[in-house]
Length: 148
Image (cartoon, rainbow, N blue to C red; front, side, top):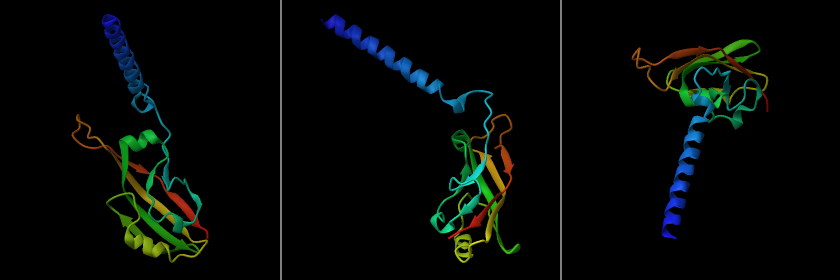
């Protein structure tokens, strides 16, 4: 009986190991040569209408989970416009969140005004060992119209 339980435990261990190895290798983010469509979003919204009061503490990130595991947004500009006129223009050089100064200005805007994120820059989380630096990428812009 003891020999059967030892064999069973050994078999169970081998099966668990196979399942773990297969789970690790099935991660689509690790597939070599696979291309992903990456779009910048704010609070998960790719542009359009937004009630900014519900999203003041949200951030810019990517629509693709694999991209978020390998690349981070490191800086951006924010233009606040009403009736086509730029009221304020900000720069966040250290991250993907609205700064306190940006939040204060945004909450004063009226419905119909726009927020435009541009100059969005990102950087890989891991250093390229061959070049001894991080890869950096520029992304387009995101435009939102404020609603109540």
